[in-house]
Length: 154
Image (cartoon, rainbow, N blue to C red; front, side, top):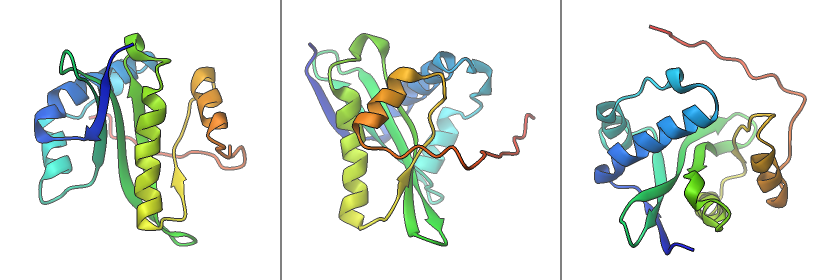
């Protein structure tokens, strides 16, 4: 079992974080969907137009980032300020060591310390391991709402 530290993401992490985002997209059978660049992540994660934040799981021996949790704040007209967990991903070689739980707990702690009323995310219906993980965390699954999106493919 590797020694792993969870910490807030730093600018220097962006190249490894983007690689993990691409690994997640490959796992989700959509590698062609990743369009974001390192420069965009730097701008949107650390610039004047900051829109997201993240935690990393760092292998203390190799100094490699082996997991990420990317989140941002949103607004609900019913609940007020909320947190959206956009991605949580742990490299396959480091799964089943509690790293995902530690990342999840750190994001959840942000909600609690800020007094937020809701944290939400999505999970693919075929990702049974993730569904079981969220069930263990007492997640409520919503089969009533339909996800909608408009995507610029350009």
